[in-house]
Image (cartoon, rainbow, N blue to C red; front, top):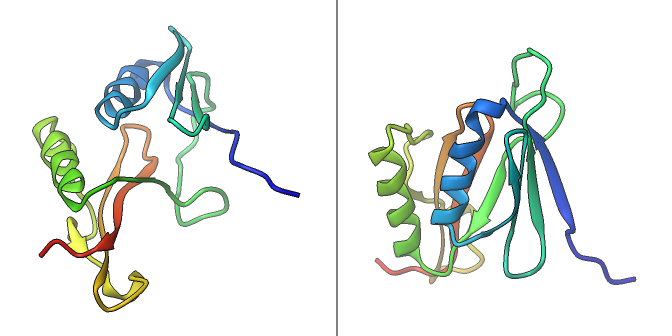
Length: 136
């Protein structure tokens, strides 16, 4: 059997849907559907993420049961820096001393795992990461 990721649903506050729309537009994803309570975005591999603006009022703990973070891969190390600048320009704090190289996750000595981590307004943890030949 061969499978691919089809979609992920993430429940968020409806007032934050525009944050996700702007974020994923910057990442090069396409809007599949949008209204006041739902946003569907898709990548070039036909995978999609659906943000549903209907939640219970509970606190998300990304170190508890459930999803820890959603990672989006980039084609270059510079793309990670572009996203870092975009996010900080919007007042989004980067977490865990990122951007940074993580040699413990690199596939080989000449490779890198270069990442940023941040929280959305709904406290969903995101990562933007480049894996490949280290630029510097």
